[in-house]
Length: 290
Image 1 (cartoon, rainbow, N blue to C red):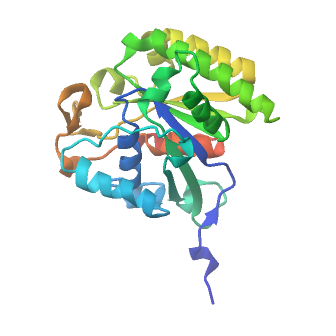
Image 2 (cartoon, rainbow, N blue to C red; image 1 turned 30 degrees about the horizontal axis):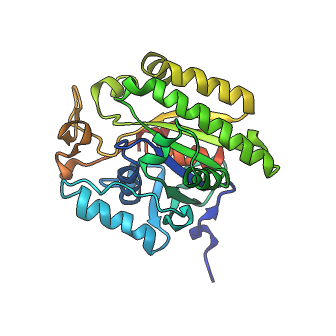
């Protein structure tokens, strides 16, 4: 007889996500670290496991083990002419029973992502090209966006605000044309390089961080959220993490385009929280540290 208590319960939600962001913000590194989840402590974590669903997603695990862990950087993501040719990465994320109220068995979410190269985000400031239009249509077919921003790139605040303005306009056209409710769309804005001191110290007060470092971006995102009645929220992550205490030190060497300094202490954080929020629309503070 099958013991149903050992079978995870699939959690209701929507996990069809598109990942965009400027060049060098760490999109591929984010996904690879999420699939690999190094130095994960299952005994004290709400996460039971994260597993690739298919061979394409298994390549993310291999990239983490054979490139990132070896102190190298993955190649930049290319945007093929047809966005449908971009690989779909699907992860099964299993959470423990105590993670949700009145749940006696593990719960599971299945998340599928397409990741687009940085040129897409940069081109949003310009008039749409046929290629960009294809990608925007693809983004509008998803349930939400995960947008990565380099947390040290405040000099590009105005650039980001303009890109978001054009993105909102183009997505609005496509969603309403297909009779989709814009207030159901979710957008997670994730600031990367959270291991750096100026971001690390603000990780528990992101609203203040964004208002100081990215004020134009924050103003427009508020406008977008009110206009659509949709959920837009901020997160911070680090694909490499920190090491030591008092104070913790970034586990990175090589500056803005750095690599892991000490692979044996590689412990990313903040990778699961935005994925879970996009899927469920709910927060859990414990996931922000994983």
